[in-house]
Length: 471
Image (cartoon, rainbow, N blue to C red):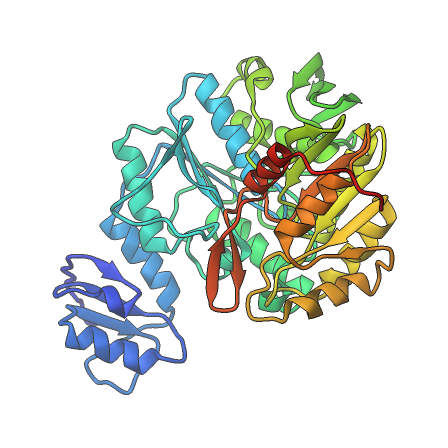
């Protein structure tokens, strides 16, 4: 065995960023040899690759895992308690709820995910490693952020873990105190190909990262997920609505802007818990956050005291405005299960017609388009199909795939015009739900990204006071 002494200024997985003295780890791709040559030309100290024709390259078995290990070696400090959340829906909400629970419990807390980096209640612009719009950044950026959080005296930190990130081993060197699996629905099959492979990627959080004796948070309401997690971890804290869960909600009463329920914690019951959210799936998200907080040494009594102060996440079941005695909401639901959950909740509180506006993204899982059209057709009184992020697909083709199973839909490709039309239809008691983009502030068309914010468009239209139209 040959021992190699490693000295490095920094670690890179993108050859464009290599500087003299850096270590470059070549991730397998179509341009592998070109990237390797570029790194060598820029005088990288060492270049690692799984395979290469260049004799200056050191061969390794797993480039992604090595990048993760080197990132941890270079940036080796992290907050004392780090937890991670995976699942199709709810990751961002659970992470933000958990950070709020910790903050209100007088802990220095942070979270990283789809909406960026937050410490306490403040969004952070991290100059040392710009945060992409990925749910989970690359391992080098990730470990730089963790070390930054530690320097800022953060003790409790929560990470969202996407299936892509778990498959690509971005989190494989994080020391986790606990991990949670929210739920599973069909998504990202353009990448994973099958639902079995998609689930397997999610389970890597418990199989390969979380130590087997540390708390795994999972709901018995989802037997398939519970069974999968149980194969790798026996220290399970279960949450949900089913009576077999350790932490559960019962006697649920839903109102327009709040939910009241009894919290069962083991053999104890805490009655009349009030949260300023609505919808059963938001209760599930809160229960998951409670379970994670409890798993890392937060007393249940302290957790309960914080719950009335929890605020909803931007773009998630968010009431934006009222118009003509009706309500307008924005939500991020972009999967079949997410759409079904959202519309089911809105249907319960809607006194008049439920007007649903949504679309589907291009170059993504095509299998969910007809299913989402079917759900919208069944649960909405009026459906408007518009563009989401068409990317490189013809927008009209995406819309037609949805409308195929939703014959009553109104097709308006321009999202701004679609929102205007939806609001103009409002009669007293109606609810308009603008679905799919939530917090996003852009739309992606082919090779261009244009500014677009559902919330801002709603408010602009309300100020313009559109004349009411008939369907």
